[in-house]
Picture (spheres, helix red, strand yellow):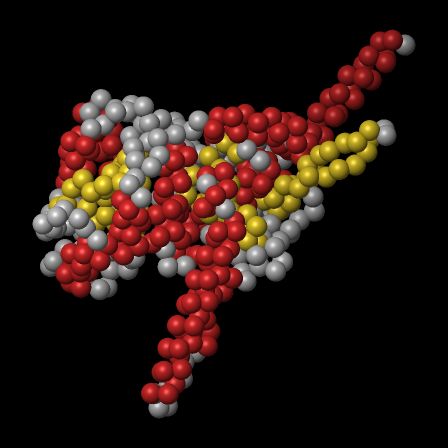
Length: 433
């Protein structure tokens, strides 16, 4: 069973997302904890939101008081409503939410029947519930629930204690080739990606990009791959490095084999549905693009947005570090395509800009001797024209997967190999003479 914990501030959006499942007959309310039941057992979004209001009012300082949790058994598991209820209650009790108001929704819109739980992390006394190390605690509870209810264990990638977090390539240092080699030589061992675009999205977390080159060799068409290092703005900051410098697995032919294998494997990957659901929840609860990315990052998912020179989004890629798979948004669903996000964020930004300008005008007309900084009023909209810079948080999401190859110079190794071959040819020629 896979658990995802979303943290946000938009309670109405979290409830609305689940209510839409009920309205489309793909969901139902299984349990209300510390929430009064209605006479006809029907519940509107506004009613459920109202039941949480006293808790939200008791603590207005907590930045993200809303918790949206999904528990996802394997598609082959057959879990009754009664078992879902008991699992939800045990999970919430052990996570420290037993005395909180929460709603358990059952979703049946996909093959993997699962439950969503909406709650808040602040009590009536105004104190915030501790949520340190909630991810490892959640994983431990899921493993126990799998044993108790005889569920299929979630497949997890094996990690060793000796693995180190690998940092992005620093184009200002001298050992650029070694840094690139450390990344491209090890990525195929850990991640699945079905296209060059998805591969580049993953490489971008390490300040690297790969570019296909075409030409002719002895009159025959020849395709190859070169790698560049990127600077903080995502621009090329180095000369091209031929893929052959980094080994066979970094070349175009081998990558295309990896793409084909990953594409076939990802078709039946059960984590696809979980990832899709997690992204949809974030779309309903996030206040802007930065918040959307941050919500997913907290759940081990990187979002890579590709824009053209005019600022239009033409690619959305999601990197799930838990399943170690890279997905294009359109491959997950039509509602996660680049066009959807482009229109959504554009409309959202226009609305926020209008509200900010209105508030600014009101402040200027009602306040004497005070000025409002224009930069602050429009700071929310910078993401329309600028890419978010990669920071350490993005790489920390990798969970220490990639071993660092320290002190290796692959160009020097290639030169040494050429010298060995040359010596062998000289020996053969000497013997022949």
